[in-house]
Length: 359
Image 1 (cartoon, rainbow, N blue to C red):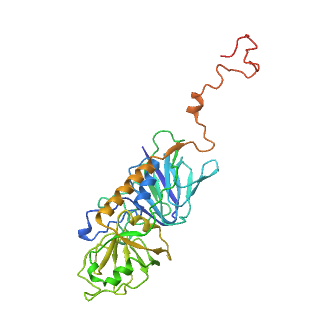
Image 2 (image 1 turned 180 degrees about the vertical axis):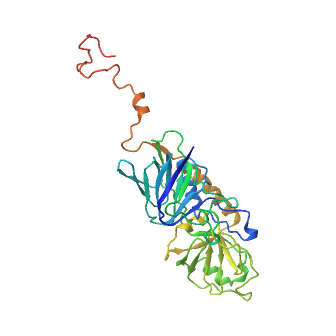
Image 3 (image 1 turned 30 degrees about the horizontal axis):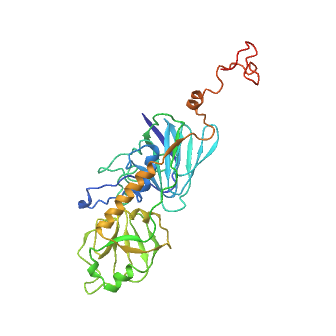
């Protein structure tokens, strides 16, 4: 059974994203997909979806969603909250890392993200049309999303209606926490285009995130990374999310989900997959430190992240929101056996009408 939500406020920097569009880089189509696939998986887990179901990614402020038909469960991940305005005019606070259920006529107003990106999962996933095997939005080529663009006021999003008890909500025991410390990288593949001093500076000096940042990449500012006699250009070859290019000005560029598929700047290093989601949460002025690791260490870090996420998902518990009566628990508890009227029993449990003890 399907359900429909209407966008009544589009928010800012909101897009439909999923696992990304793989298998088409050879014809110049970027992967796109969620900047933080771990938080995407967390939001989906809250509503019972597959980890890669399409979600709404929120970069600045979230949308307002009105349920038109069906009952919809919404899950939030990231540093943002929301307000649920129901048809009785009540305004209920909805924290992140939990769900809220919308009945027809209810409105969910999702606030701004205080840090990084956040995700809004809908029961059954956001069911826009797939293009090249993905629902992810790539705005530069008008691929995916809502007819190739971000959701706008008046757009209607289809998802699945809630199955099971619509009065039951879900929340995690604690917010997901990414690893901390330096961003781990694997050096190369054009490490040999840089002086030994440049490589040492890259791994020992801080680099500040500039305002020149979007889903395509982050420009950093710090100690200039000098190229050696091989120069600052190469024959264009493949790049991927996490690639760190260094143009002639010596300032690194970290490529992100919407990055191009090839480039002609030497690549000093690549961010490992386990740490790339962390870069979705940086802000201008943040300082990044890098540390080199081996392929073996990178693979172990990813396995550890997968294990930690599985453990986090295992902490998700159901609960009844304030004001919702748990009828199953109420009927299952034999509170006062056989009582019909409150004046039948005295304080000692003796029936004043029959003289029989309570039991």
